[in-house]
Image (cartoon, rainbow, N blue to C red; front, side, top):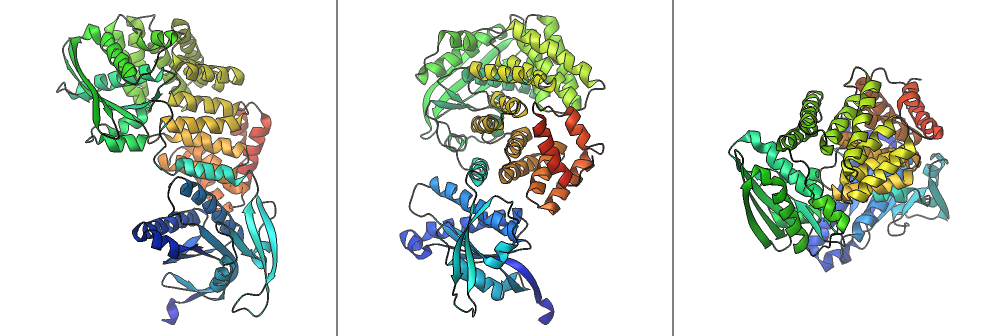
Length: 591
Protein backbone atom coordinates (compact mmCIF):
# COMPACT_ATOMS: atom_id res chain seq x y z
CA UNK A 1 0.00 0.00 0.00
CA UNK A 2 2.86 2.35 0.92
CA UNK A 3 4.30 2.04 -2.62
CA UNK A 4 1.13 3.52 -4.07
CA UNK A 5 1.51 6.76 -2.09
CA UNK A 6 3.18 9.80 -3.63
CA UNK A 7 4.07 12.95 -1.67
CA UNK A 8 4.81 16.24 -3.37
CA UNK A 9 4.47 20.00 -3.13
CA UNK A 10 1.69 21.36 -5.35
CA UNK A 11 -0.76 24.18 -5.85
CA UNK A 12 -4.18 22.88 -4.83
CA UNK A 13 -7.57 24.01 -6.06
CA UNK A 14 -10.73 23.34 -4.10
CA UNK A 15 -14.10 24.35 -5.53
CA UNK A 16 -17.69 23.85 -4.47
CA UNK A 17 -21.15 24.90 -5.61
CA UNK A 18 -22.77 27.63 -3.53
CA UNK A 19 -26.11 26.63 -2.01
CA UNK A 20 -26.20 23.20 -3.62
CA UNK A 21 -28.81 22.00 -1.09
CA UNK A 22 -31.22 24.72 -2.17
CA UNK A 23 -30.65 23.85 -5.84
CA UNK A 24 -31.43 20.18 -5.15
CA UNK A 25 -34.59 21.11 -3.25
CA UNK A 26 -35.71 23.26 -6.20
CA UNK A 27 -35.30 20.47 -8.78
CA UNK A 28 -33.30 17.44 -7.65
CA UNK A 29 -32.75 15.78 -11.03
CA UNK A 30 -31.92 18.97 -12.90
CA UNK A 31 -29.66 20.22 -10.08
CA UNK A 32 -27.57 17.04 -10.09
CA UNK A 33 -27.25 17.20 -13.87
CA UNK A 34 -26.25 20.88 -13.79
CA UNK A 35 -23.69 20.37 -11.00
CA UNK A 36 -22.09 17.44 -12.81
CA UNK A 37 -21.95 19.46 -16.02
CA UNK A 38 -20.39 22.41 -14.14
CA UNK A 39 -17.57 20.29 -12.78
CA UNK A 40 -17.09 18.58 -16.12
CA UNK A 41 -16.59 21.96 -17.80
CA UNK A 42 -14.33 23.13 -14.97
CA UNK A 43 -12.27 19.94 -15.29
CA UNK A 44 -11.81 20.57 -19.01
CA UNK A 45 -10.61 24.10 -18.26
CA UNK A 46 -8.22 22.78 -15.60
CA UNK A 47 -6.70 20.32 -18.07
CA UNK A 48 -6.34 23.04 -20.71
CA UNK A 49 -4.26 25.04 -18.18
CA UNK A 50 -1.95 22.14 -17.41
CA UNK A 51 -3.70 21.05 -14.20
CA UNK A 52 -4.97 17.65 -13.08
CA UNK A 53 -8.53 17.19 -11.75
CA UNK A 54 -8.29 14.53 -9.05
CA UNK A 55 -11.60 14.17 -7.35
CA UNK A 56 -15.21 15.15 -7.84
CA UNK A 57 -17.36 14.27 -4.86
CA UNK A 58 -20.90 15.53 -4.53
CA UNK A 59 -20.65 19.29 -4.82
CA UNK A 60 -16.84 19.67 -4.57
CA UNK A 61 -13.91 19.46 -6.99
CA UNK A 62 -10.19 19.06 -6.14
CA UNK A 63 -7.33 19.60 -8.59
CA UNK A 64 -3.58 20.21 -8.55
CA UNK A 65 -1.23 22.43 -10.54
CA UNK A 66 2.52 22.84 -10.67
CA UNK A 67 2.27 26.65 -10.90
CA UNK A 68 0.01 29.09 -9.07
CA UNK A 69 -0.32 31.27 -12.21
CA UNK A 70 -1.93 28.36 -14.08
CA UNK A 71 -4.31 27.69 -11.19
CA UNK A 72 -5.36 31.34 -11.09
CA UNK A 73 -5.77 31.51 -14.88
CA UNK A 74 -7.89 28.36 -14.99
CA UNK A 75 -10.08 29.49 -12.08
CA UNK A 76 -10.80 32.93 -13.49
CA UNK A 77 -11.36 31.64 -17.03
CA UNK A 78 -13.88 29.13 -15.74
CA UNK A 79 -15.69 31.63 -13.51
CA UNK A 80 -16.23 34.02 -16.42
CA UNK A 81 -17.29 31.22 -18.76
CA UNK A 82 -19.64 29.76 -16.14
CA UNK A 83 -21.29 33.14 -15.57
CA UNK A 84 -21.91 33.44 -19.31
CA UNK A 85 -23.20 29.85 -19.42
CA UNK A 86 -25.65 30.44 -16.55
CA UNK A 87 -27.03 33.58 -18.20
CA UNK A 88 -28.33 31.42 -21.05
CA UNK A 89 -30.10 28.82 -18.90
CA UNK A 90 -33.13 30.95 -18.13
CA UNK A 91 -34.21 29.40 -14.79
CA UNK A 92 -33.23 29.35 -11.11
CA UNK A 93 -31.17 26.13 -11.04
CA UNK A 94 -27.83 27.90 -11.58
CA UNK A 95 -24.67 26.31 -10.13
CA UNK A 96 -22.38 29.13 -8.96
CA UNK A 97 -18.89 28.13 -7.85
CA UNK A 98 -16.42 29.37 -5.23
CA UNK A 99 -12.71 28.55 -5.56
CA UNK A 100 -9.81 28.43 -3.09
CA UNK A 101 -6.13 28.10 -4.05
CA UNK A 102 -3.27 27.11 -1.74
CA UNK A 103 0.23 25.65 -1.79
CA UNK A 104 1.09 22.63 0.30
CA UNK A 105 2.36 19.10 0.47
CA UNK A 106 -0.13 16.48 -0.62
CA UNK A 107 -0.38 12.72 -0.79
CA UNK A 108 -1.61 11.26 -4.07
CA UNK A 109 -3.05 7.75 -4.10
CA UNK A 110 -5.49 6.12 -6.51
CA UNK A 111 -6.29 9.47 -8.19
CA UNK A 112 -7.20 10.98 -4.80
CA UNK A 113 -5.28 13.79 -3.11
CA UNK A 114 -5.15 14.38 0.62
CA UNK A 115 -3.06 16.53 2.90
CA UNK A 116 -2.82 19.92 4.55
CA UNK A 117 -2.79 21.78 1.21
CA UNK A 118 -6.21 20.41 0.26
CA UNK A 119 -7.69 21.40 3.62
CA UNK A 120 -6.19 24.90 3.35
CA UNK A 121 -7.61 25.34 -0.18
CA UNK A 122 -11.01 24.28 1.15
CA UNK A 123 -10.86 26.83 3.99
CA UNK A 124 -9.92 29.59 1.52
CA UNK A 125 -12.72 28.60 -0.83
CA UNK A 126 -15.19 29.17 2.02
CA UNK A 127 -13.97 32.78 2.24
CA UNK A 128 -14.61 33.47 -1.44
CA UNK A 129 -17.64 35.31 -2.73
CA UNK A 130 -20.03 33.31 -4.96
CA UNK A 131 -18.34 33.24 -8.37
CA UNK A 132 -15.07 34.37 -6.73
CA UNK A 133 -11.55 33.08 -6.14
CA UNK A 134 -9.38 33.35 -3.00
CA UNK A 135 -5.67 32.60 -2.90
CA UNK A 136 -3.21 31.98 -0.07
CA UNK A 137 -0.57 34.67 0.40
CA UNK A 138 2.32 32.24 -0.17
CA UNK A 139 0.84 31.18 -3.52
CA UNK A 140 0.15 34.82 -4.41
CA UNK A 141 3.86 35.60 -4.00
CA UNK A 142 4.78 33.12 -6.77
CA UNK A 143 2.46 34.59 -9.44
CA UNK A 144 4.30 36.97 -11.84
CA UNK A 145 2.84 40.42 -11.24
CA UNK A 146 2.89 41.28 -14.95
CA UNK A 147 0.04 38.82 -15.54
CA UNK A 148 -3.42 40.43 -15.95
CA UNK A 149 -4.74 39.63 -12.45
CA UNK A 150 -5.91 42.06 -9.77
CA UNK A 151 -5.67 41.27 -6.05
CA UNK A 152 -7.55 42.59 -3.03
CA UNK A 153 -6.01 41.90 0.35
CA UNK A 154 -8.40 40.28 2.82
CA UNK A 155 -5.81 40.50 5.60
CA UNK A 156 -4.65 37.68 7.85
CA UNK A 157 -7.37 35.19 8.71
CA UNK A 158 -7.68 32.61 11.46
CA UNK A 159 -8.62 29.34 9.77
CA UNK A 160 -9.99 26.23 11.46
CA UNK A 161 -7.31 23.56 11.85
CA UNK A 162 -4.36 25.94 11.35
CA UNK A 163 -2.31 27.36 14.21
CA UNK A 164 -0.94 30.39 12.38
CA UNK A 165 -3.03 33.09 10.63
CA UNK A 166 -3.02 32.90 6.83
CA UNK A 167 -2.75 35.90 4.53
CA UNK A 168 -5.60 35.81 1.99
CA UNK A 169 -6.22 37.65 -1.28
CA UNK A 170 -9.33 37.80 -3.47
CA UNK A 171 -8.14 37.57 -7.06
CA UNK A 172 -9.95 38.75 -10.19
CA UNK A 173 -9.20 39.27 -13.84
CA UNK A 174 -7.96 42.74 -14.70
CA UNK A 175 -10.86 44.75 -16.11
CA UNK A 176 -11.42 44.33 -19.85
CA UNK A 177 -9.04 41.41 -20.25
CA UNK A 178 -10.76 38.16 -19.36
CA UNK A 179 -14.13 39.39 -20.53
CA UNK A 180 -12.85 38.79 -24.06
CA UNK A 181 -11.88 35.21 -23.20
CA UNK A 182 -15.27 34.60 -21.58
CA UNK A 183 -17.08 35.91 -24.64
CA UNK A 184 -14.94 33.78 -26.94
CA UNK A 185 -15.43 30.66 -24.83
CA UNK A 186 -19.19 31.27 -24.77
CA UNK A 187 -19.17 31.85 -28.53
CA UNK A 188 -17.44 28.53 -29.15
CA UNK A 189 -19.04 26.31 -26.49
CA UNK A 190 -21.54 24.72 -28.87
CA UNK A 191 -24.69 26.02 -27.18
CA UNK A 192 -27.76 26.36 -29.38
CA UNK A 193 -27.75 29.91 -30.82
CA UNK A 194 -30.51 32.37 -30.08
CA UNK A 195 -33.06 33.10 -32.80
CA UNK A 196 -32.28 36.30 -34.71
CA UNK A 197 -34.76 39.16 -34.74
CA UNK A 198 -35.42 38.89 -38.49
CA UNK A 199 -37.02 35.90 -40.28
CA UNK A 200 -34.43 33.12 -40.43
CA UNK A 201 -34.01 30.09 -42.66
CA UNK A 202 -31.73 27.16 -43.38
CA UNK A 203 -31.76 25.58 -46.84
CA UNK A 204 -30.94 21.89 -46.52
CA UNK A 205 -29.12 20.10 -49.36
CA UNK A 206 -31.66 19.12 -52.00
CA UNK A 207 -31.70 15.36 -52.47
CA UNK A 208 -30.38 14.00 -55.76
CA UNK A 209 -33.23 11.83 -57.10
CA UNK A 210 -31.66 11.23 -60.52
CA UNK A 211 -30.40 7.75 -59.71
CA UNK A 212 -26.92 8.85 -60.81
CA UNK A 213 -24.36 9.74 -58.12
CA UNK A 214 -22.50 11.76 -60.73
CA UNK A 215 -25.38 14.25 -60.65
CA UNK A 216 -24.76 15.03 -56.96
CA UNK A 217 -22.87 18.19 -57.89
CA UNK A 218 -25.97 19.43 -59.74
CA UNK A 219 -28.42 19.09 -56.85
CA UNK A 220 -25.81 20.58 -54.49
CA UNK A 221 -25.26 23.44 -56.93
CA UNK A 222 -28.95 24.28 -57.10
CA UNK A 223 -29.09 24.30 -53.30
CA UNK A 224 -26.12 26.64 -53.13
CA UNK A 225 -27.68 28.98 -55.69
CA UNK A 226 -30.90 29.19 -53.68
CA UNK A 227 -28.89 29.90 -50.51
CA UNK A 228 -26.96 32.62 -52.35
CA UNK A 229 -30.11 34.20 -53.79
CA UNK A 230 -31.87 34.25 -50.41
CA UNK A 231 -28.83 35.55 -48.56
CA UNK A 232 -28.84 38.71 -50.68
CA UNK A 233 -32.11 39.76 -49.06
CA UNK A 234 -31.34 42.27 -46.30
CA UNK A 235 -34.42 41.41 -44.19
CA UNK A 236 -33.69 37.69 -44.10
CA UNK A 237 -31.20 35.69 -41.98
CA UNK A 238 -29.80 32.74 -43.99
CA UNK A 239 -27.56 29.98 -42.65
CA UNK A 240 -24.35 29.36 -44.61
CA UNK A 241 -23.86 26.46 -46.99
CA UNK A 242 -21.27 24.71 -44.79
CA UNK A 243 -23.59 24.45 -41.80
CA UNK A 244 -26.63 23.43 -43.86
CA UNK A 245 -24.64 20.73 -45.65
CA UNK A 246 -23.73 19.07 -42.33
CA UNK A 247 -27.17 17.44 -42.58
CA UNK A 248 -26.62 16.06 -46.09
CA UNK A 249 -27.58 12.38 -46.32
CA UNK A 250 -29.01 12.28 -42.79
CA UNK A 251 -32.54 11.54 -41.64
CA UNK A 252 -33.99 15.04 -41.29
CA UNK A 253 -35.47 16.08 -37.95
CA UNK A 254 -36.33 19.67 -38.85
CA UNK A 255 -37.16 20.57 -35.24
CA UNK A 256 -33.69 19.53 -34.12
CA UNK A 257 -32.08 21.19 -37.13
CA UNK A 258 -33.89 24.44 -36.42
CA UNK A 259 -32.70 24.35 -32.81
CA UNK A 260 -29.08 23.55 -33.69
CA UNK A 261 -28.86 26.21 -36.39
CA UNK A 262 -31.00 28.77 -34.59
CA UNK A 263 -33.58 29.36 -37.33
CA UNK A 264 -37.36 29.57 -37.55
CA UNK A 265 -37.78 27.97 -40.99
CA UNK A 266 -36.22 25.13 -42.95
CA UNK A 267 -36.39 24.69 -46.73
CA UNK A 268 -35.82 21.20 -48.09
CA UNK A 269 -36.39 19.52 -51.42
CA UNK A 270 -35.18 17.21 -54.15
CA UNK A 271 -33.93 17.41 -57.72
CA UNK A 272 -34.52 14.86 -60.46
CA UNK A 273 -32.61 15.39 -63.70
CA UNK A 274 -33.12 13.15 -66.70
CA UNK A 275 -31.29 14.44 -69.73
CA UNK A 276 -32.57 17.96 -70.28
CA UNK A 277 -35.71 17.61 -68.15
CA UNK A 278 -35.97 18.65 -64.51
CA UNK A 279 -38.27 18.12 -61.60
CA UNK A 280 -37.69 20.10 -58.41
CA UNK A 281 -39.74 19.50 -55.27
CA UNK A 282 -39.47 22.05 -52.47
CA UNK A 283 -41.19 22.54 -49.13
CA UNK A 284 -40.92 25.25 -46.51
CA UNK A 285 -41.32 24.07 -42.90
CA UNK A 286 -41.71 25.88 -39.61
CA UNK A 287 -38.96 24.20 -37.60
CA UNK A 288 -40.39 24.39 -34.07
CA UNK A 289 -43.75 22.82 -34.97
CA UNK A 290 -42.82 20.83 -38.09
CA UNK A 291 -45.74 22.53 -39.84
CA UNK A 292 -45.54 22.78 -43.65
CA UNK A 293 -45.94 26.38 -44.81
CA UNK A 294 -46.05 25.37 -48.48
CA UNK A 295 -44.92 22.60 -50.79
CA UNK A 296 -44.55 22.85 -54.56
CA UNK A 297 -43.37 20.77 -57.51
CA UNK A 298 -41.66 22.46 -60.44
CA UNK A 299 -41.34 20.69 -63.80
CA UNK A 300 -39.42 22.05 -66.74
CA UNK A 301 -36.49 21.77 -69.07
CA UNK A 302 -32.88 22.35 -68.10
CA UNK A 303 -33.18 25.66 -69.91
CA UNK A 304 -35.75 26.69 -67.27
CA UNK A 305 -33.38 26.14 -64.32
CA UNK A 306 -32.95 29.82 -63.47
CA UNK A 307 -36.68 30.52 -63.74
CA UNK A 308 -37.35 27.60 -61.38
CA UNK A 309 -34.81 28.92 -58.88
CA UNK A 310 -36.36 32.37 -59.13
CA UNK A 311 -39.81 30.96 -58.41
CA UNK A 312 -38.58 29.19 -55.27
CA UNK A 313 -36.83 32.35 -54.05
CA UNK A 314 -39.90 34.50 -54.71
CA UNK A 315 -42.23 32.14 -52.85
CA UNK A 316 -39.90 31.85 -49.83
CA UNK A 317 -39.57 35.62 -49.59
CA UNK A 318 -43.32 36.10 -49.92
CA UNK A 319 -44.11 33.35 -47.39
CA UNK A 320 -41.82 34.96 -44.84
CA UNK A 321 -43.34 38.40 -45.50
CA UNK A 322 -39.98 39.89 -46.38
CA UNK A 323 -39.92 42.90 -48.68
CA UNK A 324 -37.30 43.00 -51.41
CA UNK A 325 -35.86 46.31 -52.47
CA UNK A 326 -35.60 46.90 -56.20
CA UNK A 327 -31.84 46.36 -56.08
CA UNK A 328 -32.30 43.09 -54.18
CA UNK A 329 -34.87 41.92 -56.71
CA UNK A 330 -32.39 42.54 -59.47
CA UNK A 331 -29.57 40.75 -57.65
CA UNK A 332 -31.52 37.83 -56.19
CA UNK A 333 -33.83 37.05 -59.07
CA UNK A 334 -31.73 37.89 -62.10
CA UNK A 335 -30.53 35.14 -64.47
CA UNK A 336 -26.87 34.26 -64.46
CA UNK A 337 -26.02 33.10 -67.99
CA UNK A 338 -27.70 32.03 -71.19
CA UNK A 339 -25.22 29.16 -71.64
CA UNK A 340 -26.28 26.21 -69.50
CA UNK A 341 -23.02 24.38 -70.18
CA UNK A 342 -21.16 27.32 -68.63
CA UNK A 343 -23.45 27.13 -65.59
CA UNK A 344 -22.83 23.38 -65.34
CA UNK A 345 -19.05 23.90 -65.47
CA UNK A 346 -19.27 26.45 -62.62
CA UNK A 347 -21.26 23.98 -60.50
CA UNK A 348 -18.61 21.34 -61.12
CA UNK A 349 -15.84 23.83 -60.36
CA UNK A 350 -17.43 24.79 -57.06
CA UNK A 351 -17.82 21.13 -56.09
CA UNK A 352 -14.11 20.46 -56.71
CA UNK A 353 -13.03 23.65 -54.97
CA UNK A 354 -14.95 22.84 -51.78
CA UNK A 355 -12.70 19.79 -51.29
CA UNK A 356 -9.64 22.06 -50.78
CA UNK A 357 -6.89 19.75 -52.04
CA UNK A 358 -4.18 20.54 -54.56
CA UNK A 359 -5.51 17.99 -57.05
CA UNK A 360 -9.14 19.11 -56.76
CA UNK A 361 -8.06 22.74 -57.05
CA UNK A 362 -6.51 21.93 -60.43
CA UNK A 363 -9.74 20.26 -61.56
CA UNK A 364 -11.72 23.28 -60.37
CA UNK A 365 -9.39 25.54 -62.36
CA UNK A 366 -10.13 23.52 -65.49
CA UNK A 367 -13.90 23.68 -64.91
CA UNK A 368 -13.94 27.45 -64.41
CA UNK A 369 -11.73 27.88 -67.46
CA UNK A 370 -14.18 25.87 -69.57
CA UNK A 371 -17.07 28.01 -68.26
CA UNK A 372 -15.26 31.18 -69.37
CA UNK A 373 -14.71 29.73 -72.83
CA UNK A 374 -18.42 28.97 -73.08
CA UNK A 375 -19.50 32.40 -71.79
CA UNK A 376 -16.80 35.11 -71.60
CA UNK A 377 -19.27 37.41 -69.82
CA UNK A 378 -20.06 35.01 -66.94
CA UNK A 379 -18.84 36.70 -63.74
CA UNK A 380 -19.15 33.67 -61.35
CA UNK A 381 -16.71 31.75 -63.57
CA UNK A 382 -14.09 34.51 -63.28
CA UNK A 383 -14.65 34.82 -59.52
CA UNK A 384 -14.35 31.05 -59.08
CA UNK A 385 -11.13 30.90 -61.09
CA UNK A 386 -9.65 33.83 -59.16
CA UNK A 387 -10.49 32.15 -55.85
CA UNK A 388 -8.81 28.91 -56.94
CA UNK A 389 -5.68 30.81 -57.99
CA UNK A 390 -5.54 32.63 -54.64
CA UNK A 391 -5.52 29.28 -52.87
CA UNK A 392 -2.91 27.88 -55.25
CA UNK A 393 -0.67 30.80 -54.36
CA UNK A 394 -1.08 31.06 -50.59
CA UNK A 395 -1.19 27.28 -49.97
CA UNK A 396 2.15 26.82 -51.71
CA UNK A 397 0.63 24.78 -54.56
CA UNK A 398 2.03 27.04 -57.27
CA UNK A 399 5.62 27.04 -58.55
CA UNK A 400 5.40 30.83 -59.02
CA UNK A 401 3.22 32.31 -56.27
CA UNK A 402 3.59 35.91 -57.41
CA UNK A 403 2.63 35.16 -60.99
CA UNK A 404 -0.34 33.11 -59.80
CA UNK A 405 -1.53 35.93 -57.54
CA UNK A 406 -1.22 38.42 -60.42
CA UNK A 407 -3.44 36.13 -62.52
CA UNK A 408 -5.92 35.94 -59.63
CA UNK A 409 -6.02 39.74 -59.55
CA UNK A 410 -6.81 39.91 -63.26
CA UNK A 411 -9.66 37.41 -63.00
CA UNK A 412 -11.10 38.97 -59.82
CA UNK A 413 -11.12 42.44 -61.39
CA UNK A 414 -12.78 41.00 -64.49
CA UNK A 415 -15.46 39.36 -62.34
CA UNK A 416 -16.27 42.71 -60.72
CA UNK A 417 -16.39 44.43 -64.12
CA UNK A 418 -18.72 41.72 -65.47
CA UNK A 419 -21.05 41.90 -62.45
CA UNK A 420 -20.45 44.54 -59.78
CA UNK A 421 -23.33 43.08 -57.71
CA UNK A 422 -21.60 39.70 -57.24
CA UNK A 423 -20.51 39.53 -53.59
CA UNK A 424 -18.06 36.67 -54.16
CA UNK A 425 -16.21 38.72 -56.79
CA UNK A 426 -15.62 41.53 -54.30
CA UNK A 427 -14.57 39.09 -51.58
CA UNK A 428 -12.00 37.43 -53.85
CA UNK A 429 -10.70 40.78 -55.03
CA UNK A 430 -10.32 41.75 -51.37
CA UNK A 431 -8.30 38.60 -50.77
CA UNK A 432 -5.94 39.42 -53.61
CA UNK A 433 -5.54 42.98 -52.32
CA UNK A 434 -4.81 41.57 -48.87
CA UNK A 435 -2.04 39.25 -50.07
CA UNK A 436 -0.55 41.98 -52.24
CA UNK A 437 -0.54 44.32 -49.18
CA UNK A 438 -3.15 46.82 -50.34
CA UNK A 439 -4.84 46.65 -46.98
CA UNK A 440 -7.32 49.53 -47.12
CA UNK A 441 -8.55 48.37 -50.54
CA UNK A 442 -9.00 44.85 -49.15
CA UNK A 443 -11.20 46.16 -46.31
CA UNK A 444 -13.25 48.23 -48.76
CA UNK A 445 -13.91 45.19 -50.97
CA UNK A 446 -14.80 43.08 -47.93
CA UNK A 447 -17.33 45.65 -46.77
CA UNK A 448 -18.81 45.83 -50.25
CA UNK A 449 -19.26 42.04 -50.31
CA UNK A 450 -21.37 41.90 -47.16
CA UNK A 451 -23.44 44.94 -48.18
CA UNK A 452 -24.37 42.99 -51.30
CA UNK A 453 -24.87 39.72 -49.42
CA UNK A 454 -25.69 40.38 -45.73
CA UNK A 455 -25.86 36.68 -44.75
CA UNK A 456 -22.58 35.77 -46.49
CA UNK A 457 -20.70 33.89 -43.73
CA UNK A 458 -17.46 33.55 -45.68
CA UNK A 459 -17.78 37.21 -46.64
CA UNK A 460 -17.91 38.24 -42.97
CA UNK A 461 -14.99 35.89 -42.30
CA UNK A 462 -12.97 37.41 -45.14
CA UNK A 463 -13.70 40.93 -43.90
CA UNK A 464 -12.54 39.88 -40.43
CA UNK A 465 -9.20 38.82 -41.91
CA UNK A 466 -8.80 42.01 -43.91
CA UNK A 467 -9.55 44.05 -40.79
CA UNK A 468 -7.00 42.02 -38.82
CA UNK A 469 -4.18 42.59 -41.28
CA UNK A 470 -5.16 46.26 -41.60
CA UNK A 471 -4.64 46.73 -37.86
CA UNK A 472 -8.32 46.78 -36.83
CA UNK A 473 -8.33 43.68 -34.64
CA UNK A 474 -11.24 44.68 -32.41
CA UNK A 475 -13.64 44.94 -35.34
CA UNK A 476 -12.15 41.72 -36.72
CA UNK A 477 -13.31 39.87 -33.57
CA UNK A 478 -16.83 41.22 -34.08
CA UNK A 479 -16.91 40.07 -37.72
CA UNK A 480 -15.78 36.55 -36.82
CA UNK A 481 -18.66 36.43 -34.35
CA UNK A 482 -21.09 37.34 -37.14
CA UNK A 483 -19.55 34.75 -39.45
CA UNK A 484 -19.91 32.03 -36.82
CA UNK A 485 -23.56 32.90 -36.28
CA UNK A 486 -24.30 32.45 -39.97
CA UNK A 487 -22.17 29.29 -40.00
CA UNK A 488 -22.75 27.83 -36.51
CA UNK A 489 -21.88 24.13 -36.87
CA UNK A 490 -19.34 23.72 -39.65
CA UNK A 491 -16.98 26.68 -39.64
CA UNK A 492 -13.55 25.60 -40.81
CA UNK A 493 -10.13 26.19 -39.29
CA UNK A 494 -9.66 29.66 -40.71
CA UNK A 495 -12.58 31.12 -38.70
CA UNK A 496 -10.91 30.19 -35.42
CA UNK A 497 -7.40 30.93 -36.65
CA UNK A 498 -8.35 34.51 -37.50
CA UNK A 499 -10.21 34.88 -34.20
CA UNK A 500 -7.12 33.65 -32.35
CA UNK A 501 -4.83 36.03 -34.23
CA UNK A 502 -7.15 38.99 -33.60
CA UNK A 503 -7.27 38.30 -29.86
CA UNK A 504 -3.49 37.96 -29.82
CA UNK A 505 -3.12 41.32 -31.57
CA UNK A 506 -5.29 42.81 -28.79
CA UNK A 507 -3.06 41.11 -26.17
CA UNK A 508 -6.02 38.99 -25.07
CA UNK A 509 -3.89 35.88 -24.79
CA UNK A 510 -6.38 33.65 -22.96
CA UNK A 511 -9.00 34.26 -25.64
CA UNK A 512 -6.36 33.69 -28.34
CA UNK A 513 -5.63 30.27 -26.83
CA UNK A 514 -9.31 29.31 -26.62
CA UNK A 515 -9.86 30.11 -30.30
CA UNK A 516 -6.50 28.68 -31.37
CA UNK A 517 -7.20 25.32 -29.78
CA UNK A 518 -10.46 25.22 -31.73
CA UNK A 519 -8.52 25.86 -34.94
CA UNK A 520 -6.04 23.07 -34.20
CA UNK A 521 -8.85 20.65 -33.31
CA UNK A 522 -10.23 21.14 -36.84
CA UNK A 523 -6.89 20.80 -38.61
CA UNK A 524 -3.87 19.48 -36.75
CA UNK A 525 -1.62 19.92 -39.76
CA UNK A 526 -1.75 23.61 -40.54
CA UNK A 527 1.22 25.48 -39.13
CA UNK A 528 -0.40 28.93 -38.84
CA UNK A 529 -2.78 27.84 -36.05
CA UNK A 530 0.12 26.40 -34.05
CA UNK A 531 2.04 29.64 -34.64
CA UNK A 532 -0.50 31.81 -32.85
CA UNK A 533 -0.87 29.30 -30.03
CA UNK A 534 2.90 29.14 -29.50
CA UNK A 535 3.07 32.94 -29.21
CA UNK A 536 0.02 33.25 -26.91
CA UNK A 537 1.15 30.52 -24.51
CA UNK A 538 4.62 32.07 -24.41
CA UNK A 539 3.24 35.51 -23.50
CA UNK A 540 1.51 33.90 -20.51
CA UNK A 541 4.78 32.13 -19.57
CA UNK A 542 3.23 28.75 -20.19
CA UNK A 543 6.47 27.75 -21.85
CA UNK A 544 5.93 23.99 -22.00
CA UNK A 545 2.73 24.41 -24.06
CA UNK A 546 4.35 27.15 -26.15
CA UNK A 547 7.25 24.88 -27.09
CA UNK A 548 4.87 22.05 -27.92
CA UNK A 549 3.19 24.20 -30.55
CA UNK A 550 6.53 25.64 -31.71
CA UNK A 551 7.65 22.07 -32.37
CA UNK A 552 4.53 21.51 -34.46
CA UNK A 553 5.24 24.68 -36.46
CA UNK A 554 8.71 23.38 -37.39
CA UNK A 555 7.39 19.88 -38.12
CA UNK A 556 4.82 21.25 -40.54
CA UNK A 557 7.04 23.98 -42.00
CA UNK A 558 10.73 23.12 -41.42
CA UNK A 559 11.89 26.34 -43.11
CA UNK A 560 9.88 28.52 -40.71
CA UNK A 561 11.61 31.54 -39.17
CA UNK A 562 10.72 34.91 -37.68
CA UNK A 563 12.11 36.44 -40.86
CA UNK A 564 9.45 34.54 -42.82
CA UNK A 565 6.75 36.18 -40.69
CA UNK A 566 8.23 39.63 -41.22
CA UNK A 567 8.63 39.29 -44.97
CA UNK A 568 5.57 37.33 -46.05
CA UNK A 569 2.72 37.61 -43.55
CA UNK A 570 0.45 40.50 -44.54
CA UNK A 571 0.21 43.14 -41.79
CA UNK A 572 -0.21 46.88 -42.27
CA UNK A 573 1.37 47.78 -38.93
CA UNK A 574 4.94 46.65 -38.27
CA UNK A 575 4.23 46.71 -34.54
CA UNK A 576 1.73 43.84 -35.03
CA UNK A 577 4.44 41.71 -36.63
CA UNK A 578 6.95 42.66 -33.92
CA UNK A 579 4.41 41.70 -31.24
CA UNK A 580 3.82 38.32 -32.90
CA UNK A 581 7.53 37.67 -33.32
CA UNK A 582 8.11 38.56 -29.67
CA UNK A 583 5.83 35.72 -28.62
CA UNK A 584 7.32 33.31 -31.14
CA UNK A 585 10.84 34.19 -29.98
CA UNK A 586 9.86 33.41 -26.38
CA UNK A 587 8.44 30.08 -27.62
CA UNK A 588 11.87 29.20 -29.01
CA UNK A 589 11.29 29.55 -32.75
CA UNK A 590 14.35 30.49 -34.82
CA UNK A 591 15.18 33.96 -36.10
